[in-house]
Image (cartoon, rainbow, N blue to C red):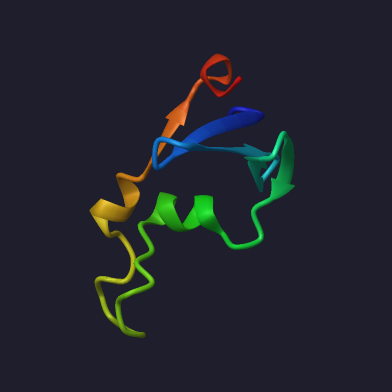
Length: 75
């Protein structure tokens, strides 16, 4: 597993995973992803599905909002 992974979220927000922790790049600095923006998209979590719905996880349209990118692209 790579030490660092970078992500592009909704074509405008850059994120990264470093040693199991997730961060978002906002206003020129990395900040912890306390709202689980990255992980929710990686697993396809749809917050609009009712609790217990089998469609709450694995939603392809949510998973399409994130893509892994190279470090060069992230910079």
